[in-house]
Structures are given as C-alpha cells and as structure tokens.
Length: 508
View: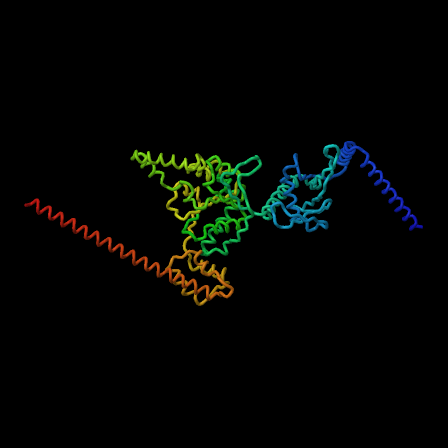
C-alpha cells in the first residue's frame, strides 16, 4: 500500500513538473521579452525580503562590448587558479596573451571559496538578451560571474575579500601572460587613433642570470637589487618618488650587456621596450612613446653614446661657437647641409633636455614599476647629466671574462665543472683580456665529434695567440716611446747647441 502511494506521489510530481516546464516553454516562446523581464525583476525583489544572501555580479562587458571588463578578467584568473580544482565541469581556453591552456569553470558551474573563515559561492552564468539585427531579433550571449554570501559578512566580502580577489587575479594574469618585445618604427603613420606607436613580437629570449658569465657575488648583488625594486611600491610612494629605477650597463663590446637585459626581463617577468632614438621625430613623439609603455616593463636604449648628439661636448661646442666666428658659420652651414640631405626634417630632433625629461621628468611618473636601461661601450663619452645618480641609479660594469665567468660558460657549453686544463686557462685569463663572447665562441662545438677537451684546447690556443699579440703590441709601443724620447732628446740638444752658439755670437 505504502509503495503504491509513493508511486502515485512521484507520478503526480512528475506530471506537475512536466506541466510547469511546458507552460514555461510556451511563455518563453510567446510572451514578450519585456513582460518576462518585468515579472523576473519583481520576483527577485520579493525574494530579496526573505533571502539572507547577497549577490554580486561581474559581467564580462560593461557599457560597450569593445573592451573586456578588467574585474571580470581578474575574477576569471582567480577562480581558474583557486577554485577550479573543485569544479567538475571545466572549459579549456587559450588566454589572449598566453601560450598556455587555461582551465576555467563551465557555464552554470558552482564552486565554493573560503576567506578568513567566511564561505562564499561563485557561479559562472550567462543570460541571453535580444538585439535588433536588420529585420529580426536575435539573442546575444552575456557571460558573468555571480558571487553569493551571507549578509552578515557584507563588510568582510565587500572590503578585504574583493580586494584580495582583484590583487590575486591580476598577479596570476601577469604570470601567465605572454611577454612581448616592443620597438618603435621610423616613419610610422597612424591612420587610426586606436593604433599604438609600438610594434611587438613575442619575447622568448632564454638568457638567465644562471647562464651569464659573471662573478657570483656580482650576480647576487644585481639580483637582490632587482627583486627589492619590484617589491618596493609602498616604499617609493612613502618617499615621494616615481616607481622606476635606472641602470647603466657599460663595458667593451661582447661583454654581455644585451644578455644582461634579457636576464633582467626573465627574472622579473617584465616586457621589454627597445627604444630606437634615431627613429623618434622630436621630444613630443618621445613623450608619446613613454605614455604608451606599460607597467612591469624595461625601457632600453642601447649604445646611448651612438644615439644622436648626447655626448658630453656641450660646453666645448659652446666655447668654440663664441670664440671663433668662422667656426660658427661653418657649423651653421653644416647643419643646413645635413638638413637638406635629411629631406628637410626626416632626421631626429630629440634633444638631451627631452631625453632627461623622458627619464625623470614629470611625465616619467605615469604608470609605475619600470626599469630604464642604457648601454654604452664608452661611458666616458656620455654627458654627466645623463648618467648622474637619480637618473641612472645603478652603474654596472660588464668587463672582460674572469675565471669564474669562464667556469659558468664551460658548464653551459660543455657540461663540465672541473678539468685538468682549467689551471692553464686560469693562468692565461689572468694575464689576457678576453671578452665572454670570444670565450663562448671557442667553447662552442663546431662538429659532432668535438668534445670538451678539444674545445678547451681551442680556447687555450686562442688565449696564447692573444697573449703573443699583446706582447708584440707592447714591445712595439715601447720601441715607439723610446724612439720619441730619443728624438725629443736630440731635438733638445740641438736647441741647446743653437742657443749656446747664439750666446757666443752675441758676446763677440
């Protein structure tokens, strides 16, 4: 009897549900959208009086549909890393600026999260809204995340929790993004206001501090300086300075200045903006380029001593222009000729003053967390105002290869950490100046049969040849100096003899 009653009850319930679903389908098909929205709005309002839970929605697009909501993207990144492990239905997508597959909650999936003992619920949902398209209506999909929590936890959620979600989500997006290498193009035209002054490719340089040929103590110092800078947002705000730092990398060619920049970018996860000054029309365009750079980036000007006329000759030129009218006329003629050859304005008009304002002027404070890096082979040529502390805060000399640097290269290229030939190489490197690039070239296997011993022998041979060449050059220089001294002595003797003869003639 009981079994029959239960069967009848389930049958009745099933029939009722089926009837309700049929009626709801009819309503959705024939009832106008405005009427349905009216009932839904007031239904939610009535239910709100009895439901103790608060809901917050994060829509994918706010206002126009041209730009994705930053809040939605941050929530999506946060949930993909923190709560999607408990979700049973997931969807896989390729991030916009990421090469990795990202797993996120599927539509209508619900997961829980906990913060400071408070439990919340997240739901991935979507609504279909009608849009007018030519002569008929079509439904448009709008996705959003819905956060639900008890009203007694409103202050905690609206304050600390949402701030935590936004911060964590942005950091996750930065870690997962595909980093880029930017450059400015000469003569670039902007037919659309949405186009940027920078073009870019994916940044995939493999250099790290571990693979750099440098003394361990120096590496540690640079790494600690970079990491400290990246975590000093509050410190820079407290002391009233823009969150940026300048690095001057100087040394002979082939000592690893460009490699150092790539290692810095890989350590901090920054984008790289390679600024070509000669392609910048004037100071105004230089300022626009700065405005379009993003935070967490490195702005690089390589070979600054070769970029425009930025060397420390301003005072000498001014004196020459005042002292010699003929030189001033020649200089003006030279400028006119250069202008004519440049097509009447195609050459860059960036000035030292404009570059200094670019580095630490008022406009340099736009954004934050930027490194500005200059490289040069001849630091003595640069204007002192350009490299003073406060503009180029840290000066890093990248010099010739030391024995510690050689050991790093030997480990990288040959996978050896000790070898009987190391003693000979240590002695020769201490006597000869050789760049890390030259050492690396000799350690590079040239054929499949080249082993560690052959490559090390090649390096020793190159070091001995360099030593012999240096010895020959030193001897030639000594001979030249001694010859000059002898000539100067003979000239002095001739002058003294002539002077004595003149004195004797006067006495007679």
